[in-house]
Amino acid sequence: MAGKNSPKKTVIKKAVKKATVKITTKKKPSVLPAPIKRKHTIYIESSAFLPLNSTDGYVDLFQQGRHAAIAGHSLAAPISLPVGAVLKSFSIHYTNSTREGILALFLRKHANRHCPSGEIEMSFISLLPGVLSPDNFLTVTDTTFPDGGLIKNKYLHYLEVPGTGDFGEAGKRTIRGISIEYHY
Image (cartoon, rainbow, N blue to C red; front, side, top):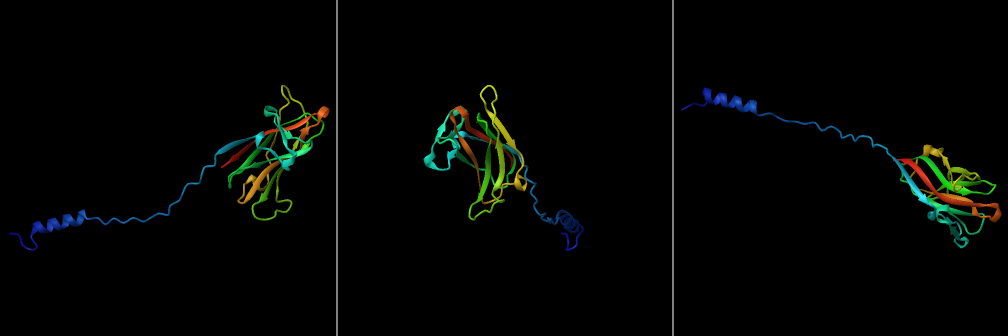
């Protein structure tokens, strides 16, 4: 029988010590990769545009767009963009067969406080008159916005197009819709 310190037991103890490995792991702080911003385009059709005063009404000309029932009055539509998005371009699709241009207003207001002038303006976009074969549809695109185009939290965005309508012999101004490109 082997004793307390027999060669056989010593070999087994050494083998067990070699086989026992203490495993320790240091937790590394988890670092998430930076999100990849992707290009998105949204389209808002003319049916989203409504008069600022509900009693003014509107005329829907389907493919030709929409205008206020009372010539010279405004139409407006909400613009929903995710907070943190970066606006790259804002295109307005319209008709304007009159001799006068109008200024479309891409605006924002704060959800829970008054915005002073200078804080509300996102862009003023000139809708020049013109005719373009075959159907007089025109597009103007703006690419300059405050804050680098960043959509900030708690702001409500909308587009107001004043001066739409049927002016008889003088022509028509309609809004056909808008397309917005942003990265998010």
